[in-house]
Every structure is written in C-alpha cells, then in structure tokens.
Length: 603
Image (cartoon, rainbow, N blue to C red; front, side, top):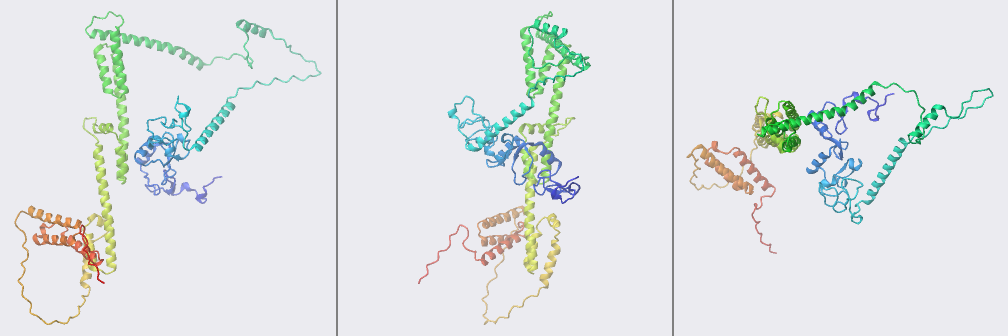
C-alpha cells in the first residue's frame, strides 16, 4: 500500500508542478530558474560549482538551514572573507557532527586566531596551544608529548569537555564489546551422546586405537612431540587441485624470477650507458668492463635530476636532461627506452595541462554566468581566487596553429566591474524615474498642470529605452498638459482703486548686456563652462541666490548655443529651492555664516 506525505493532502506530489529546491528543500515550481527562498540559481554552471565544494563541514545559515556540506578549504575561504566568525555555528568531523561555535571547533578555531579549549591566541600552523598545551585539532585533546602535568591547563568549559570524554569512553567500550562478540573464538563441539543399549545383539567397536592411528602418533612423537590442539577435524579424502589455484601459485613463483631478470637487464643497460658516457668524454675506449664510479655517479645524478624535475612538474627541464643523456651516450640500443620516457613525460605534461585548463575554463564560465545573472560580487570572488601562476598560464595560451587565444583575467574583472557600475547606475535612474512618474501622476490628479508640465520635462531627460520600457510617451503627455493649461480659465484680478497719478520720472533705459561674440566657439563654450562651475561651487556652499545670479550671467553673456547643457533647468531648480526654503522658514544663514545677533528685549 502506497503512503503519501501528510503535507501533500493525500495527493501524489512527485507528479505535480511543485518540487523541492535542490539547495534548501523548500517546495517551489519546477519552471523557475532561481529559488525564491535561498536565492540560488539553478543554472548548469552554478549546479556544477556547488557540487565541486561538497564536503563534511556544515555552517548554520539562517537563509538556508538545510544547506549541503562544504569542504574544510571552503570554510577557510569563508573565514578570510568574514562570513565565518567566532560566534558562527558549525559542525564537522572534529565535532562528531555536533553543532558548536566556530571558536570552540577543533582544527577550525586556530584559523580564527584562538585555541578551541582555552581561547588563547593561536596560529593556523600550530598543533598544540602555547597556554593550555592541548592539541588544538582534537576534542577531547591530548596534551603535548613530554610536557609536565602541572603545565597542562584545563579547558574553559570543563563540564562539556568531561562529557566529551565520557562519550569517547562509552563509544570505545561499545566497539570493543562488538568486536569481542563478532570475533569470539569458536567453542569446542560437545561430546556425542552414548548410544542407547538394546537387548538385541550388536557388533561393538573396540576403544583401542587402530593401527593407522598408532602409526601416526608414533610419527608425531618422532618429529618432536604431539601438538596440543583444542579440536581436530577428521581427515577427509584428498580432493583434486583446482586449476585456478595452480595458475596463481605458478605466477607467484615466476614473478620474482622475472623481476630479477629485469633488474639484471637494467644493470646491463646502465653499464652500457656508463661505458658510452665515458667514451663520449674523450677518455680511453671501453673494453667491455664495468663503468667507473665517476661515470655511474654522473648518470645517477642526471637521473635524479630528471625525477626531481618531474616531481616539480618542470617537464621541459626533465626532457632537456634526458636529451643530454642521449647525446652524451649515443647508444642506439637504449635510445628507444629514453625516447619512450621522453614521450611519456610529454604526454603527462599535456594531460596535466588539459586538466588544469578544464578546471580554469569551468571557473571562468561560472564567473561569466554569474555576471550575466547580475551576481557581480560572486563572479568577482571567483576571479580573485585565481592565483597568479594560473593567470599567467591563461595569458600564455595558444591554438594548435600557434595563434594566441590568451585569456586576460584582469580584463574580465574590469569588464565585470564596469557592468556592475552600469547596472547600479541604471537601477538608480529607474528609481529616480519611478519617483518622478509618481509625483507627476499626483500633480495631474490634483490638476496642478504647470507643476506637472515641469515634472514631465524632467522625465523627458531620461534615456529613451528606459521611457519605452515604462511605456511613457513624453511628447504626447506634454501636449495634453499644455492643452489643459490653455483651456483653463484665467482668473480675473480685482480692479484696484486707481491712485492719484503722478508723472513718472523718466529714467534712461538701461542698456542690456551685450553678447560675447569675440573668440572661437570652443573658447566661448569653455568660458561659459567656467562660470557654470563657479555656480556649482556656490551651490555646494548653499549660497543659492548668488548661484542664480551666476547662472543668469551665463544666459546674458553668451548665446544659447554656448550654454552648458541643462542651464535653464538648473536655474528653475535653484529658484524652486529658494522659494521652498522661504516657505518653510529655512532661509537662514548660509553654511559658514554666523547667525545675526538679536538685541535683547527691553522690558
């Protein structure tokens, strides 16, 4: 009878459109690309990267309490980035999978700069604490070997430490009991019961030993005495030997002989190489005798250098040394053996290069995918963890035809940072646009047509793609608002009582400022830009009225084609700011000015 989970309501959940998130286990739709709970992507690159760091260590993440385990190296990187702190909760092999603070976790706490037992200062390379003298990789811990007992300090949390000791003893006792029961020596079989007596006559077997048994006992006595054994199985008829057993015994016998033959043959090869090396140095011709100790020492040194270079992954140096040996000896008999080793070394170098390139390519693909998904910081973290030698390796890549196909990690980082900056700027502009659209809608609802007109003019300054995304037709909206302003009735002002007319004193007309026309267009634009910068400096000093005067001076002195972009909008904004400050009574002393002293009131 099939059973369903109680939470499924009697349905079959695994056939529906919901499935658990592979990271946090929350029930989500099968069609989405990212979990809405733990915010982790389901892309192939992220899934692959998450499986590469699986390990037996766990850290308690409030966003994903059921997250999978990670490797110890991943925890170390999280400590370096500040994601694991002393008060973080972790568990792993050294805690017997019990949740503990990271500061109390053996092996991990010293990477946080403290001992897990007494919390004294410690370094990652230390094994024993310099204060409590206990092993910082164990719990319960053993003291430093050879240290006097009076120098060993007790842990800070002694009760939990003693409990851990009791658990270890109980576990050891249980294992010992299990092993003793499992591997207990077999007990001797009970003696057979005597046959029941019957009235019918029967043939009795004599208890005296037979002649064969007596002869065997005599032979054992002659060989050195009988052997005391608990039980003895009766001899059975000898079976025929099995073919596979004979085959295995034959090979076990022949293999040492074959190995001895190969060693002798290798000794002959080395002797031949020594003789050829000696003759290649210009020495006397070899007569077939063994190589001199000097030549043998030279060859041993060369072969040792080959091994050392191969262990250090310096395969070019190893091949160069083997070529030197071949050129030195020149023996055609052993040349194929050394050439074969050169081929093997080159194949090993190519395989390691391929594996290294695959791992680095996977990292770069994961970083690119995260950058495409907007996870710029995670992508930059992956690129920052690529060491300098791997960066140099990627920068030196070439195609089989010799064309450069290098990958510049620094350029990738710069590009991702630029994309992040553009993304941040775009988000900021979208927020500003949303605020202005909301403001304009409120003004239109209140039929504040002049204010709505100014707001939509500001909206029109945003990029067209952003406006198209929000389906905003600025030109159409401006025309509609202007028609509303034109259709609005003009209020008739009250007719004032005319005062007694007095003849005005004629004043000579003030000549308007003349526009600057002398100079090249570049010079006039630069001069207007200088005045505009001075106005911006006044704005920072909160001197708004002088700023308006400076901006009006630009309009008066220069033609509009030389004006800085947004000059008129700037003037309107500053004037609106001045009116707002006056309305709210905030047009007090400017920044850096002292408030005027008011005379004391006289009673």
